[in-house]
Length: 417
Ligand SMILES: *Cc1c(COP(=O)(O)O)cnc(C)c1O
View 1: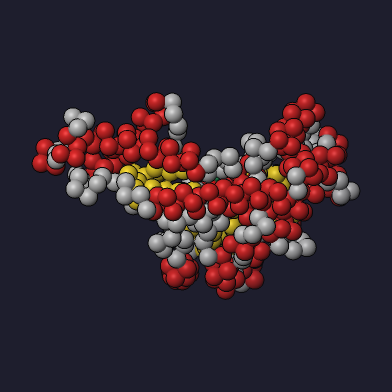
View 2 (view 1 turned 90 degrees about the vertical axis):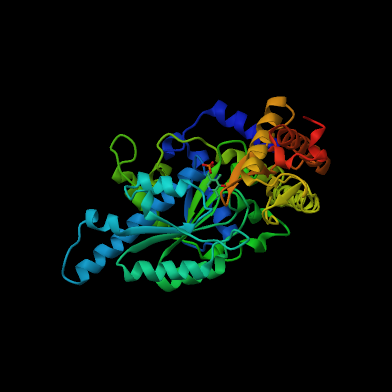
């Protein structure tokens, strides 16, 4: 976490303003709007762009899906009217689908459930070896939905998947969405740090064609929790989140163009999180923040090289960002029962945490338990990583030695039994 943001956190708590209405937070409103403009410009969303700070990527994704859902409904209603008919929203909802890669964030499923569509409305699109959405499969699903009378209300591409940091092929996906007239949401909760990167911004090429984008400053802009935003290409679409209340944001204030941020938000009382990013950018500058993100990305690349040549581990993919997903594997003359190896990996993770030395994350890839580093601290050194890998291998090796099936027990593992 960067120090200017920490200072901002202290100040915003002390000032304790809520960014719902202009009369409660004029200065805060202007600062937040400035940062939304700054982010939209970095993305390249164009003149009509707008957005709002949120509590996190989960909420940003939920709001994006709300806007996409209501845009899709409006379109279908208009088509019905053009054909001299009408259609009830309740008749449209069951036909709506969201296409997203099989390794996208689970908040998309949650959003679908909250929005009355159900988990089944989310169709997982297969990925390639690098865990990026396969555009051939996406094209296939888009066609299939059309044939079956289903309405794809949004394609959700991920720029930086939570496990692998993989970035879906944004230009190709944007092309398909344009061809099908489908809303493109890019979940850049994790990958948004590239927006400030002096050397890697090109990895996000194509993001400028999105209809909405999720960014989590509290991930790759090194901000304290919470600090996140939803950006949209067309500010008019935010009106799906608008509701006027006499006691807060009466319609008459909208007519007078009073900038009540609550008109664009799912929240009412809302923290002045923008102050943290404002101070960060004013004091450090965007390049310095981007350079920090570059540093963790480089550290992950070095750690990948380490893991890739280490016979004790296998790594799933070469990282594009700063995560590493790997798995302890026994020596080639050792046991190879994958269930046993699964348990050894689970044990290594728990034993390491219990020892108090370090905590590593875990995930499941292709049905198998893996270990995971998400490197977001530029101070983490390669020797820290090497040390943790040694500890993990020791715990896993000990577990195997104790639980080994008799037919596998050779001299290599007898020492610990
Ligand atoms: C972390 C993450 C989210 C959720 O963000 P929160 O701020 O934790 O709510 C959404 N999408 C992706 C890809 C993420 O990595």
